[in-house]
Length: 236
Image (cartoon, rainbow, N blue to C red; front, side, top):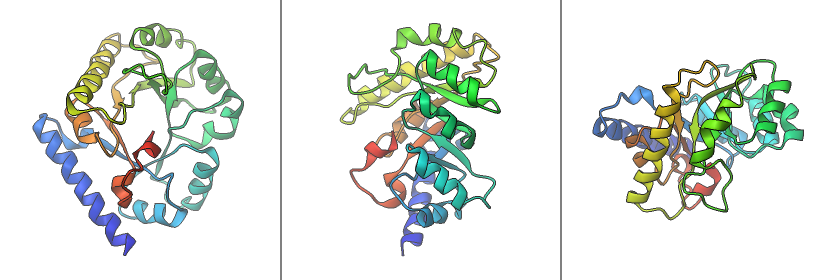
């Protein structure tokens, strides 16, 4: 029963992605759908993977490592870490992930560079709305921060990430997401080898459609996969 529900939900999400790409004159293949699987068990995560979903995200190290081992035969899976990461724990997780969505300080980048065996695809976390409850750099801090990373061969800034306020209305969402897109373009135009900044990680279950219209290339969806209303906060 759950397996069929998941398949139906994925079809609905993918239809919405296509619709919103058409509205914004984008290729649907330019949007990567991430399943935020942190609220479900290993077997349920496998059911999603069996449908062909490639990108999975967790915000706890232990759960990501456990699920990666459980799904070790599915080599196509890309693992995203979307939680805040303490420097002392970098060594425990960094070589098990493909993407990191919460880079926001020099010391953390330094530790990632030191511990990673291969370049890690990182998103710089930007607190566009400047909410005190959220981490991340302000818009004005981002360019200088990225410039400071030029010597780190194992830290590749592929893009920017943000989270909109939980209660934000459509107009505010559009403003937040378009602001981040403009900043992304500014950095991308610098043509930095260590920070190509071609990607935007923004949009969760409640607002991914608006995010796509404003340029998101990675959307982090959790509750819409599993019919879990009110659990969007888990999607980071």
